[in-house]
Image (cartoon, rainbow, N blue to C red; front, side, top):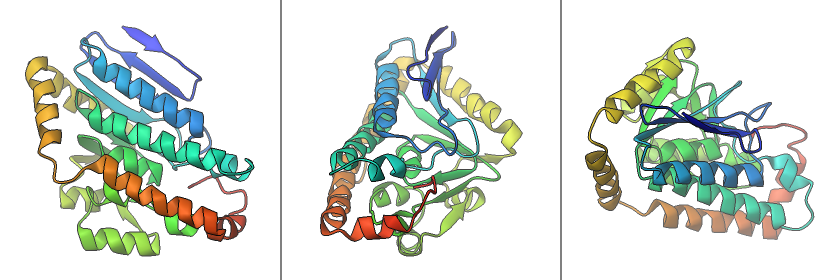
Length: 256
């Protein structure tokens, strides 16, 4: 078993069975700063490149799975350096999950918002706790993005309504749509994710890695390109000043 602790916000462990576990733990709401997004991207990508890894479980500690970008960091930084960094960091982390050479299982509890949708929407398998909710409050933050990934979780018109209203969907609803594999009590979430991981890890890793690459190859759209297209509108909103006006009313809230 090998472990890397990094900065402490992102840790990962590789078990002897080839199951790697990546854990996000950045209180109070797992909103990642720029460095955190790049660290997560690096961890997931390195695990996929490790020949001993057969599957990755991505989960979080605390109140929720992920609350997106750390808006406090963006607001506290002069100019657009933090915004551009967050844009690039999110793009890198989402791509790392999608392009990971082995399947990625997302174990989601509590809130999954903003950047969390980008991670989960690019995962191969999703297991969620009964209290999990999924949403993109981006319009309330003066931003756009991750509709690419939300549209992989819910039908097209539901995605549009959720974007325009900042409404959330429950784990049970996503299970009915077929995007969440299982919904379990919170106390059973990690075990449920590992049960799926063990089943995948029991297969020939050469076949599983080929399957992951082939499934990405037949995907209906380019998730990297479409997400970067969305991010251009986020930057436009910031250049126009609209985003700052909206975020000034955001106060000291932590979720994004």
